[in-house]
Length: 292
Image 1 (cartoon, one colour):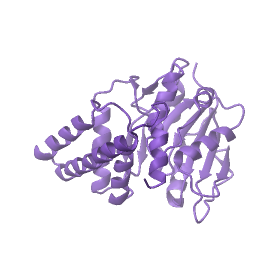
Image 2 (spheres, helix red, strand yellow):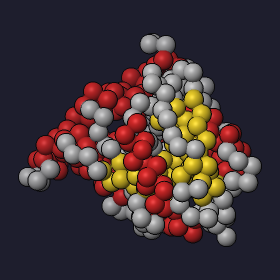
Image 3 (tube, rainbow, N blue to C red):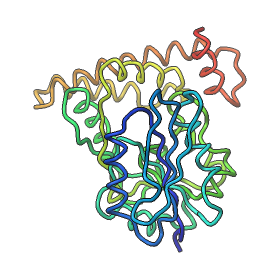
Image 4 (cartoon, helix red, strand yellow):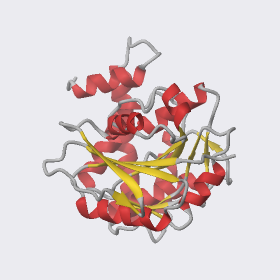
């Protein structure tokens, strides 16, 4: 049996138009399983305003006094959901639930699974958005429906509440916290599974500068063995770019971003020298925040 009562958690920061569109998509999908929507404003200069309910479902608005990041927001919101909620869904304020999302998520989150994640499709245009979608599509291409995966999209996921609390929530890192959460769930004996029908539309681009910064930080925090697919991804992107694909410019941008990622990865390994292996990601995150 799947979850009977779900809360949707949405961190937001200064995107009121996107927030309204996100809530409209929830309103279209709402059914008897949706018990609550929790919006958490991450210390925006102009606080977000939301309705008290969406399709009759209560909306709880929380606010951080200062910016703390998506992982921190999600953890605060999980602790605030109603007692009768047995699973929590996570979406971004610049995402829109697509038709059937809630029904599919409830049917696919069975007791033997820890979490679900699904595809992210762009609704915006531009080179950075196109490049990011290429990376997503390359990740999804070999996956089979229901396959256990080592990633979770923080902007498109459903997790058992008790399991999430037992795992300690999202690791409070500036990036990759959703991937690190999968490890915590696996340590509790449950995996994250990929559901192709559970997809969202998303604003993929927040600008080239943000894309470069995120690639660098992801490299800094990546503590996986050097044999993982980073170099393979770089080689594949280069092949795509040189192969005359219609998306050559986007493929070339991905090659550049992968180069930034690998540079950050090399830097992160130097920073982590001597750090105890139990919490390498947190230790490197601290070093990054302190500017070392």
